[in-house]
Length: 122
Length: 110
Image (tube, rainbow over all chains, first blue to last red; front, side):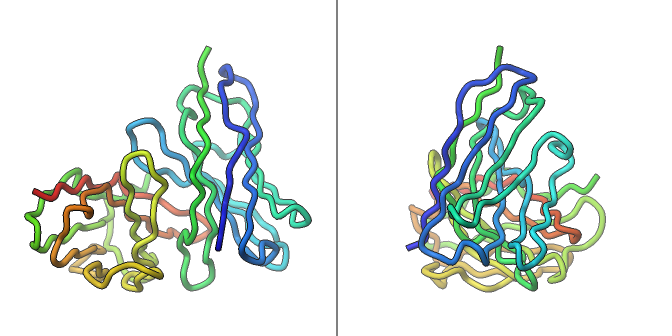
């Protein structure tokens, strides 16, 4: 059974940093593309960014609102993907979901974690 | 700026059929955007319903179907049930590693 378990959320002041983790199990993590999707309170889903598998280059892409502030990395030895969030703004307040990505000719989010809440407030 | 459009809300009677759509603020949606659809109930993580326009994800009942209708992607629910009352999101792949979600449709079954 595929499991994605996010952690690291919490309350942070504007301008601060936070690092989210997503521990994966139930599939071959090193082959997987991974993504982060967020949802502000009472709002819709917003794609944040994606990291490819190392065999596919390990490259990252980001949505415009977070580009230059957020970065995604992975540790295949720990089956974990990370979201480093810097220069946080109040509008980054959201539940952050970790997902697997089926790339190539599919391009969709296959499995989802339960999410971790990030609150940016003074 | 690319905007993916969805109806903010829709209602359907139990047993009825409803079609939700997913469009672009400029241009037409085609299979090249790999439209996918997700269902979310309050307090829960999204669930994948449809990918690559019309392929149902594992375990999704066949009353859910996807298609291209005119210049939009579409999600059709045939024989709606009470537990289909949820928020539905489409997402389009824009190329170059970028996805854009629609604003979501709140579906009421009554």
